[in-house]
Amino acid sequence: MKFKPIYIYLGAFIVFITAVIFFSNTVKNSTQSNLSQSNKEMPDDQIHRGMSKEGGEELPNKSNVMEEAKAKLKALKEEVEKNPNDTIKVKEYAGIVQAHEPDEAIKLYERILKAGPKRKDILLELTFLYYNKGDISKAEAYNNKVLSLDKNDLLANYNTGGLAQAKGDIKKAKEIWAGISKKYPNTQIGQIAGELVKQIEQLPKK
Image (tube, rainbow, N blue to C red; front, top):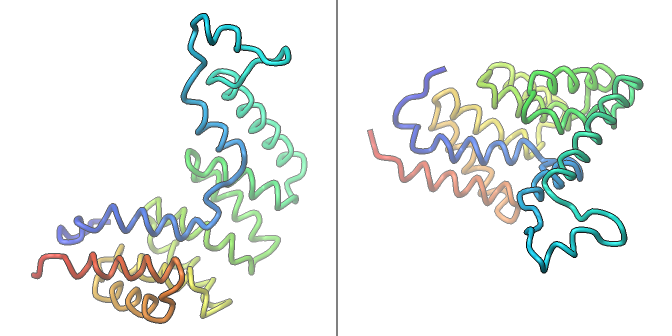
């Protein structure tokens, strides 16, 4: 899908913000947290060399934290394979792999939907994943399912603005976000929607 040049100014910002809102469970589990903390190793000098072990155990470093994360991921994958109907574990695993294996995450989320077709949290995850893949049609279909279950769902209503923008209808996106900003001024989503309206208003006129 090609976007009109006038929207490039807003593109990255809107994609980022929309992703944040779609993805309501931003911190999936401690595995991801461990990975983000594995950037530095203990300096190898006289002061720190004696601190490399505490109580006979190695302190966390890039190598052992990565190995621990891999082991946890492997164990979780095995649990999902042994118990494919455990939707809690399936969702947890899908949340971890979706950054690097979105297609696998989509399969996992769709498996959960078979067991619970009215789960708004899963429908919103699929909305985000398909949006991120550039498949706006499927993203819109899943978002509309949320609205069919709850026409007042704030996330889904906000998402309609992002989907409209993705299809090139900046006027509709502005109207949607302006309405949300006015109706829900004290919510995070309402405040973000208001900021997006301001960004749109700063676009050069045709």
